[in-house]
Length: 302
Ligand SMILES: NC(=O)c1ccc[n+]([C@@H]2O[C@H](COP(=O)([O-])OP(=O)(O)OC[C@H]3O[C@@H](n4cnc5c(N)ncnc54)[C@H](OP(=O)(O)O)[C@@H]3O)[C@@H](O)[C@H]2O)c1
Image (cartoon, rainbow, N blue to C red; front, side):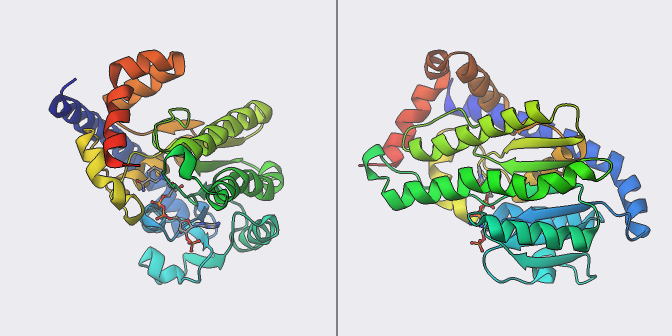
């Protein structure tokens, strides 16, 4: 498929998906705003990795939608700066997803502050992209610690109390673009962590069937954030339109409200490649992933 045609398709479906997310936002906002006016009944969320490009956008959106929020990441930060609001709707706590004790402390403090928790969103993640032989032991250890062990420890820290509270909750883990199982060249070790997360979420949901708690794998499209900026040119050449963080934030909000087990963003091209890859990687190669691979290779010279 020519790049221009693919790009138009991606843009068209991105717009459709965004309209759906917006419609859902409008529909449920009135109820949540009404709850928010009552103070303690406002919807609540914990965002871990809240100071990055996507976390920042989500924090501002949830604050504007009347959520009471606990924000967390490793470095010191001010909740009012992250949310652009100084009405006390958010507090900021330091936490490290690689440290289970720090996550237990976060969970205890978050339940104390919020009372009940409707959503935990994990936006902490790293994505070093390198040739196979260049991933260092430090890269691999960090990838496993942040992208694989982090979501497991975070889920474990919150789950017992989420199961006990009435009404349940959703724990949203951000993965990579597509469904976590599409592994592109020069992203091998990174892709392995996203595949592991997708399997973890799947297994957890089967185990949690019959409860009110749901885990979600959220696959953002490549977005206009600082962390993704080294790859803007590569995505452009591949015909994948960059998404604004506010759009991703609205889709995460829709995922929270609908408690979706998986939400893979992206237009028709990305969705088609994701589906084809799940059925047969060689079909996915033939219809587009091989071309993607060549472009990534050009962008990542050895
Ligand atoms: N942006 C995109 O285009 C894109 C596309 C696909 C997937 N994603 C994924 O979506 C997630 C969010 O993306 P982003 O662009 O917002 O990333 P980002 O800008 O790099 O932000 C990452 C956030 O996680 C925090 N963090 C990092 N390590 C942590 C740790 N060990 N414990 C707790 N917090 C930690 C960072 O703050 P501190 O350093 O202060 O801890 C920061 O708040 C990531 O998993 C990313 O890989 C992003």
